Figure 1 (cartoon, rainbow, N blue to C red):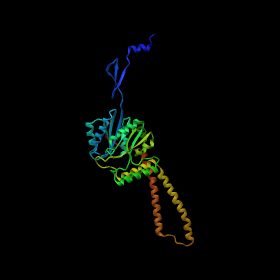
Figure 2: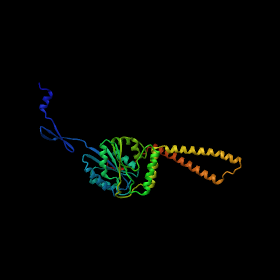
Figure 3: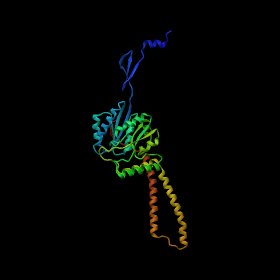
Length: 350
């Protein structure tokens, strides 16, 4: 007796499915049925570009990224510019590029809120399966995006680049400051950062979700990304020369960034202040027998100069310790106020 399955097979032919770039063509009894096409979702890559006075680089960086993704047709992509309070024509050029090209969105801040807050705003709007952050000055070469995506597809959830050697396009002072910063960070904090770690990275959407759940005032993403964990891979690279404009990172900004980064990831400066207090308290106790001996033996103790020097030294030490405590109290105070990390003046997101 013919089974139910055999009856079913006698009435319906087996579907032949051929895979094309973006759809499935279905054949029934060797006859192509064009209306029966099944579309499947392409993976989407979001690219964040925080910009500050980068009017010379906007169009060039877009053209480079666009040309790169023409070779990656198996992916959808979106480009998000975050204007961090530029004072030049950066925003107007972004708007002009948007009218002529696809894939682009923008966010414009009411003032300068900092690069990491700009990245946070972009992460909040990005819709990709993975997210790439990079600089708009083209020192992060767009052709390196391919390797980031490749390693992400291999299962790595965070892939980032670090400088293989010193940046030949930076000044000697900048190089020394960079080395000192990462050395101090690795000693004082509980996160390990490679010397020359960059903001050129790809993050899986799960990592982005974890980062957005961290409600921090003035985030330091290079440290936070290390802190959240996940499967991470570091790749060496050599930065190229800046295409146009000048870097907005001045010594004053870098010092502020260093202080914020250290106090965000460690309380060791407070512990150091306690140790310093114990050491000098112990030394002052050792001075008491000397003072008593000098009094009994009628030996003159150092006069006005030594007293003034001692008072000045310990006064400065007290101010330093109080300043360290003040930094942490200040961060707690600012966090408790609940102010937004950034204010959007305008955007083309719905």
